[in-house]
Length: 488
Image 1 (cartoon, helix red, strand yellow):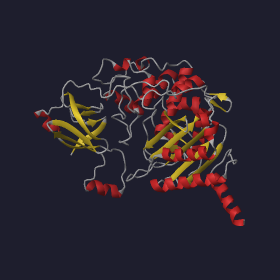
Image 2: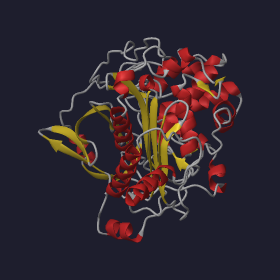
Image 3: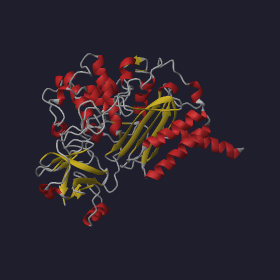
Image 4: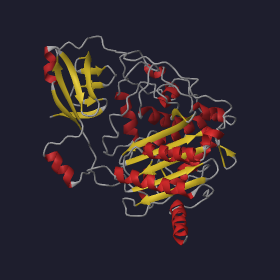
């Protein structure tokens, strides 16, 4: 009996270690042990040194914990700042919808109304910037590629946000505006720039006034200097890369730093349909715009799918040495989030924890459809056009293409590498490589991370894959899908 009491006390301790706040202790403590064990296994499997995790409903935290140490050797706690990477997209989208609520912008008018100087390259249509809307930017249907030529997840070299945003104009659209889906950081960075234009505030100040302060998110920012000055933070951990603070120029798509407690508040606002602490941050109707599927199970800054007879909302992040995931089921009033200081599929841990809780508490029997007023996120699902090619020529090999044949590598600038990575590079290791070759009298591209694609020439030296990725070999500034490459 004494041993049983000791074990129970230990379980309760594990459920509240390194935490503070309102914790629900009504659930079976055995489930807390499961959450703890699941988290430890996940950390060990992925080699994660520091992690924070929580499961909660719209009013209180059910269980939360913080594990390991930061890159500064401080204990991770529920206020430790992590980069949340692409989870930032959900916050940026909310910022846009708040601006729409206040009449500052309309998400369905061309972005040229707000950024009249902006242009982008395309081989599909004239003046695409007069057709692209904020809704398209936030739903990844504008045609923009994933990364910008300057400031991206492959190149950690410090650049200003202005340099990053200006470089987007060098991009080539992957498909006609609004016809398909392609996950893109660039749309959200442009959206942040538009919010700055219409509000007259720096994006960080806008987030602070409109979202962070109202939600009590006092450890959240996109201001790099605030992160630098913060002691209770962790840097990211990339294999072979020295751990240090790398500024992130992806202002709308991946620059938010936040903490476990802050992000719980943020998702609880979603679970309360736009309200937090009895104050309404956003109208329910506008919030639901985030949840309407456009293409590829993506709404506006939000991924949507179904499980347990209901739908869930989610976004994940990874890059600059971090991993993150937010996940919530509106009709079951339950949410989970994971923040890690190493890239990993944090969704697997969040979904494992939330699934265990739903099953253990028979949540599927108490699905609440009244609160959502019968809302169905898939009612707005659109059809896409696959494989649209802008090229007027075929891929039959031309003699002048011989000069393009060979191997290229992606330039990984800005990183400080560990000694063993430097040795690997000295012996010829190249993590991201591209090979252009002639196969059966056609020109083909093979990348180490995306596989093979046939190339089609649009202009001399400018090629596209069927998926719309541009390979630009026209001058000395070589790029593939906006990533800088060099021949070796």
